[in-house]
Image (tube, rainbow, N blue to C red; front, side, top):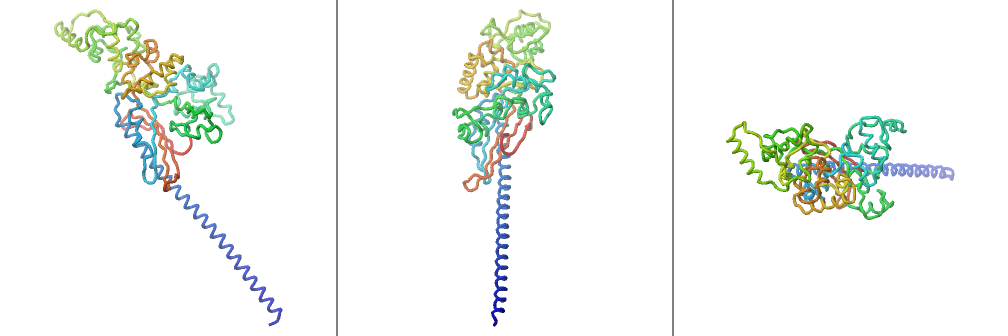
Length: 456
């Protein structure tokens, strides 16, 4: 075979080899790409499966909390109730390769942003006068700004403008639209809403959120403000309260079990203008104790009425004593509506909310601390707002300031559920859900629902 022919054959073999190598390389790239895509598909599929599991785990947590709330006794609501203190049902519950944790927050433990006064706002941590004015301007119905506030023109002229509400806040996160309200002020350091000072919440700028490294959990305004709270105008047994500004003597006597003379005094004292608060029934001259029990008085009045007939004459009016007031305080009202917006539950409110209600002085701070210490020692909390006076926690002046703004029961709650997929002992996909429910209606009503990641 000639050298020329051998060279040609060699070139052909070389080309074939190069071609084979190229084919192998292409197939390798294709295989790698397919494998990579397959792994991505597997990961996506796994994440979607985990997300679905977390979604239903969150739903299970929400329904668990709703069930506890529905089973809860309604005489009073406090932080020792199962909806607040329930580690067994709420913490790290395992469900279908997930675990979830639930936290329930009483919305009536907060100041209602739609009824709060400017002075009360200014008692909150880090609140400034210009922000307080802007909040009031956002919700009022006029176009006249307060001293340091802003109205619609400011918001409309922003780079991305929007309209001012000029009406009640619909959700508390709407507060973030108000001039001066930042996420740091609104959410604080407790961005995962677990109520605990986690490591990332005390490490300064090392990891989100930004914090001041002071080893104290600074809660944001979302912990002190709400737009959902109200008080049902009923007593501890669910009976409609008696309006002392409208009820006649017979209604007052029969419904409250008080003396006829006391009912007559209430009618005379209210005059034509009625009462502004149930606290108007008492003053510094009110007797401490009744002359005889309400039951004896009712029996005596019934016997006298039977003897004299329906046309019996009137007797001298008798001022309401403090002991009787304490007994009937939860049964009376000066409001005609079914609901009273914005009342704060003194059994669940944090210190700064109580301070804001009381007025904000150093003495008010001490009163707030005394209330918190007292309720902590009570298994069932305070049963009536009058307990604040009867137990010596507030004086008459302080009670008159806050009587119209407080309650001992709650119906609207925020439920937060955090679900994490379990990858054989390793945490996988996480999901959180926040729901605001009103158990005052049957079945309960959902006022707000959000599911996802990040701040809710």
